[in-house]
Image 1 (cartoon, rainbow, N blue to C red):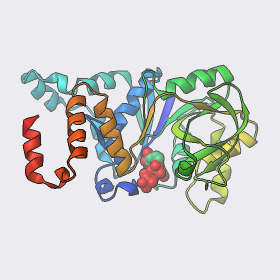
Image 2 (image 1 turned 60 degrees about the horizontal axis):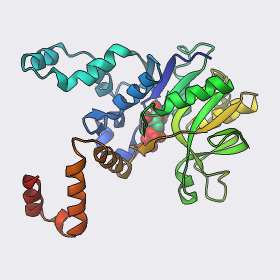
Image 3 (image 1 turned 180 degrees about the vertical axis):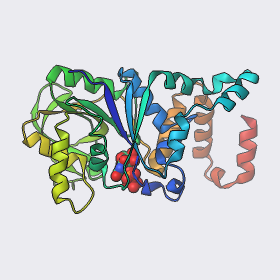
Image 4 (image 1 turned 180 degrees about the horizontal axis):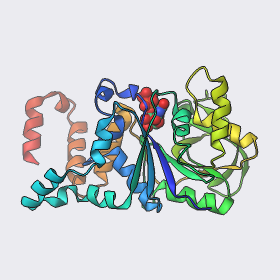
Length: 307
Ligand code: UTP
């Protein structure tokens, strides 16, 4: 199986981050010095994928601007001997081919994927949701691709979550456990209640899917009254005979799609980064030991100037 393309849907409304997302797409949210989308494309590169299809809309020029070359800025940085400040972006740009596809209305994740059908041929392809960041040396997509090639079917990334969290995720039902990490899927339920949940294996935003997802999306589209869910289309494709596997991916998963998740992501990443780790640890220790610390602006200034 050869997989050469990945779809990155970025055309949602980002309502959990309003009003901020009114003018800045949530895919551009900063995680230390780079926006979320940058980490996603780096992960695709680690999986040896070059062609990335970004689903976007006309209200998100910041996304396309980010990847456009800026000759004046590059020259200004060279003049100051500071070209290293954007070298990660320049290096990424040389490794990718971007295609932008418009989703004129946010009709759901399934609909967003369907917008790229004219670019996907009769092949398997990756899907990466930019609000799920997985920190792992090889990346989550590369792990899925290996399984897809080995098993010859579609693969969904999952991680185990506590039962009282299942209602925030898509959850897979298990037909058969094949190894410690690999399962054949029997069904998928979007945001189930605790009593409806078929397992505690929650979907992480990485998939390798067959092109057979497109006719499945068409069938859903014919009856759709609400958003078209990708999980429903995967279930439909599975009932038509496509084998679907769930693979427990390794790595730390962060959800940057809401304010609390984003705060945890930034702090978690900073604690793993040698440039910031000590100062953030010190800051968190102080904040914990002095209840009034966070509410005392004078003390905050004092503290920061000490570091
Ligand atoms: P989410 O449901 O997490 O994002 O979709 P959202 O709808 O933008 O955010 P909320 O729920 O209102 O806060 C997961 C990914 O799918 C994209 C989003 O941009 C996000 O990256 N998406 C979602 C689309 O591209 N089109 C859609 O119609 C819906």
